[in-house]
Amino acid sequence: MGPTTGSLDNLPNDQDVVYSGSKLISVASGPTMRRVLTLAGLSFWLAGVGYAQESGSEGFTVRSAGAVMVVQPPDAGEALAYLERTLADMAFFRANNYQVSLPDHPLFDGSEPPSAEAHERKTVFAEEVYQLSAFDAALGVLSGQARELQVALERIAGWAEHDGFKAVDSVTVTLTLYGPGGSFDPDAGEVILWTDTQGAFKGGGGLHTIVHEMVHIAVEHGIAQPFQLQHWERERLVDLIAQREFADLLPDYRLQGGADAPLDPFVLSTGLAGLRDAVAEYARTSRPE
Image 1 (cartoon, one colour):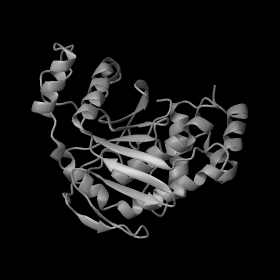
Image 2 (spheres, rainbow, N blue to C red):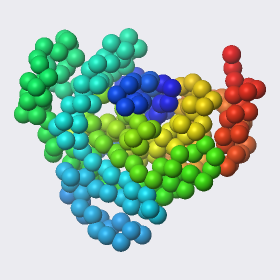
Image 3 (cartoon, helix red, strand yellow):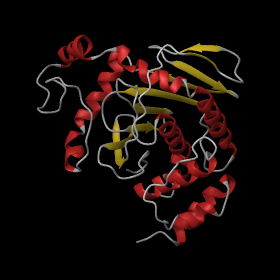
Image 4 (cartoon, rainbow, N blue to C red):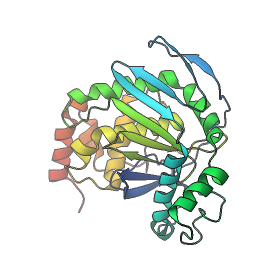
């Protein structure tokens, strides 16, 4: 999907979308691994940061070495905006056999074109569909992984010293009940993470997806776009980086597709400092026709 994220086993109901602003770039598919934990209201001490954080409907913040990550539920307007964007792309999703989560409501289930004016849809959504508490379980799960998120944030923020890597020092993770598995906006530094009311996530779980999306954000403008990497190439690049650089946090990280890809030796033969040059050499000499 141009830049895409989060797929491992090609199961059809775990899609991942990449947006730039409101423009759909592409979609990927992957597995479903559900972790159902209800930990809303969990208090925790964020090691190395020095403050206690309460997890609940308002979300929480992780800070590390000058970088910050905000994990939050959407407000009604944000939730509706993402839902409307998803509905606008339903023809694409259906044509490519993607399964997309939508509300069980006739105005928003995608069965018919919108029949109400925008102001009416906004009112109906806020009064009949949206519930802030629907995100409590997912926030509880993620807050329990705050230390891991802190480590990931600090690590990726440090990659900016290498050629081709964006300074990812401010990340917003916004939860959603709608759409495919997840998305990222490299310009806004935003990850949109699908969950359900039980706190389950698609892909390898919430931590896996957030790390994967952050790696995408880090390499999108400086490596993936300049060398016109296609969907599978971008996914492979991000998978190889994430698997190697986060082996301690994600020891079970599995590569999409499994088999070796032409890009592999170029990425695996160098560290982060030489990665842009290695991808440039791949694009110049070895890209499949």
